[in-house]
Amino acid sequence: MLSKFDDYPIHQTAEPLFHTASSDRFTYDRYWYNAHARDGSFYFGVGMCRYPNLGILDCSFSLAIGGRQYAFHASRRAPLEPTETVVGPFALQILEPMGRHRVLIGPNETGIECDLTFSPRTAVIEEGRQTLRNERFVVMDATRLDQFGFWQGTVRYDGKELAVDGRNTFGLKDRSWGIRPVGDAYPGGAPMNAFQALHFMWVPIHWDDQCTLAGLFEDDKGHQWHNDQAILPAYATSSDIPGVIDPAARTWDGRVEHRLKLVPGTRQASGATIVMHDKSGESMEIELEPVLLHRMKGLGYQHPTWGHGKWQGELAVAGESWDADSVNPLALENLHIQQVVKARCGKRQGWGVLEQMHIGPYTTYGFDDWFDGAK
Image (tube, rainbow, N blue to C red; front, side, top):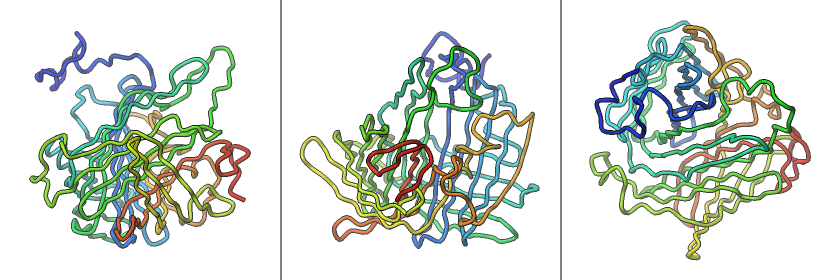
């Protein structure tokens, strides 16, 4: 099956680009974005993913504002042309590869619409390959790139209109692909202990002159089996960025230290200290003050109905909203969160997010079971 990509010299196998190199049903290729106001008054996230071996293309848009969270979801049978990034009223436009992207949601029954453009302020950075196995097969094997930028445009929701000012709305583009649990679990076979504790934190921060990224995965004993650390120069306009890869960008090889203060009865931070350590001995300590909470189920993560890669039919569109404080913080669907944070490093101030997903026991913070909260 040929596609538009086959006219470019980018092939990695003898097959057309439409055909995946892996037959794993959990193969995925995702676009993901976030945005947050400088004053912490709102956050929105966007996701769209193609699951080539499931034949599904789905997307979500989620907005946290004024004590409520609003979510738009859509799913369809994946088109044969991979460059077709449209799901009902939702469209993703790549205006410039590794540059400006545009997200559109036209009029629809959910009342959620948008016209938003992401413009980068850094080059891209490649995170390290993330690989996790259970006792029988590969659970995750993925690569991710990140790019920091600003958002401009409008969002309509609940009869209101939100003006998104590119001077004060920071954000990030995250592209990942590979293998990750999506859709339905593998059926059949001999029983096994398929559940593994997984603790993930991810901290992208915008500073005036640069952007920093710290991310980590740990197991139930606090063993840090993967981390990423990067420092990228920031530019006034996207035309100033020196190329896809900035030669002035740095990646650190070391450990990410973390000290969280947790809200009692939850797995949510009320404050945090993140320390990036390089093997050279250089370090960077960042203090984080959470100011706004966004639950990632608004973008499909652990969503009981709109989970990633779930077959919803030839085309389905839905919307939902909820009070931010009305949900059970320890339910599986609510454990994965991003918090808008104010950041400090010495006298410097920054803005970003603290993402947390704590599933299972965790000796580091005293979690004894799968869904208990902080003491």
